[in-house]
Length: 206
Image 1: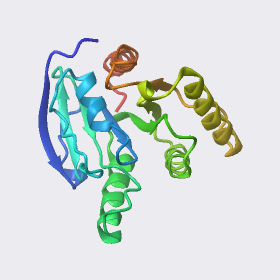
Image 2: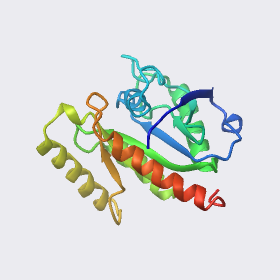
Image 3: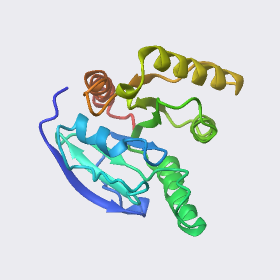
C-alpha cells in the first residue's frame, strides 16, 4: 500500500464524538516514549503528522487521521505514564477503555513495545486486557535499529515465553520496526491493506 494522503480530522476525549464514518480504523497505542509518533510519521510519509516530543505522554486525546480517504489511523494516549496525576491517568484510561470496548469501526489495534527492553509487566498486562476483552490486536516492536538482531530475537522469545505462561495459546501477529530506518514499513502497510480488502469485500463486517 502506498499512502498518498494523510489528513488530521479530530482530537477528542469522548468516543461518542469520534468520526461517524463507517471506515476501518487502526488504533496505535503503547507505553509512553515507545516511539509511537515517530512510527506514525514514518508509515504515513509525514514529518509532523503526529506530534513528537522529548516529553513522554504528549498524546492525551484520541486523534483521528484519515488515510487515503478510506481508513482511519487512530493515535491513542500512552498507558502507564508515571508523571501524570492519578486523576488524569484515570481519565485517560477510561476513554481508552471506552474506545476499545465501544468503537465498532475498530478492526485492529497495534500495541507498540520498545524492543530494547525485556518483557515488561505493564505491556503483558495491557495485552492480557486486550485478549480478555476479545479486541483484535497485533504487536509492533519499535526501535529495532537500537539493538542487535540477536537481542531482538531474544527479547521476542522472552515475550512469547511470558505470554504462553499467562495462558496465551499463541503469540499475536507482530512486526519489527524502526522509524529511523523505515524498517517494517512495507510489512505493516501490507497487513493493513490486506485487512482493508477483507473489510471492504465483506462490508457487513461492522
